[in-house]
Amino acid sequence: MSMRRAERNAIPRNAGAALLTALGLLLIFSLLGSGYVGYMIIENDRADLQVRDVRASAALDGAMRTALARMDAALRAGKAPPEEFAFEFPVYIAAPEGLIAHETRRTAVVITATVAPESALPGYWLQGEAYVADALPDGAERRTAPAYAEAVAVFPEDRAPQVLRWSSVRE
Image (cartoon, rainbow, N blue to C red; front, side, top):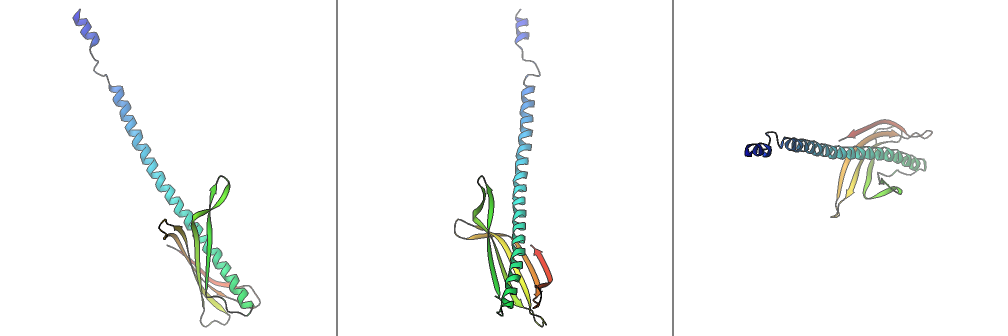
């Protein structure tokens, strides 16, 4: 009788195998999940940098065209065009109430205009640099996504400015 009771109370050989299997699967899925989260953080940062690149390039393109128009207006008025143009654009972000300007981020563009040597028409060489700047808590700023462009333009009296060469460079 005691033998039967001992057999009945004996622990089977595979007891706890389901628990170990469940814990093993939990470990595997936890590692896969944390790896996926890490990968998505990197991808999110990469997407943010791509947005900054596009934002800086678009700001530079618009600023170069605006500088050309302002130079043309000055030349038509008989004045010398400015040698430097500076533009700042706010960065907008999506919010529940719509698009709002980011409090600490802006896009800045600086364009310098130099008289093109030996030109029959009034000609200028424009060099532009744009970047996205974030204001840091200590008052400094962090610049990212630099974009550079060069243009050579002539300003005929009877037509709009003619861009002879336009080159965009990305770092």
